[in-house]
Length: 129
Image (cartoon, rainbow, N blue to C red; front, side, top):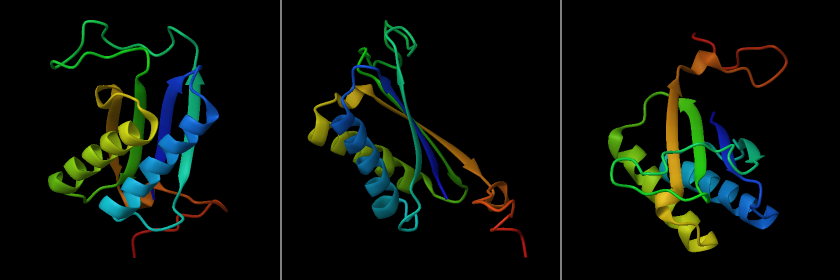
């Protein structure tokens, strides 16, 4: 049930954008056990200066204008080990497949209850029973 939002700089080429999406989807299905075909993503490219981050760094991590901001909204229930493995796989694979620095892969998870989704038709497909 995830909804993924990926924010990139406007100079990011389409192949890189597509690869980032594929990496996140693969990590969700292989590491976090998201169902196959559950691929809902929004990719937004931003002009220079529209991705705001601490230029001096944060928590010892220095960022560049090549930062990739990834936010995943998914159902509550995954443990810390799964989340750590997900973060690691996304950062490692994005770096390996695109050359984007691991330090520039910023991820935020938002956890919600299953009844917070409607996949169409105005229905709550995962309504409490």
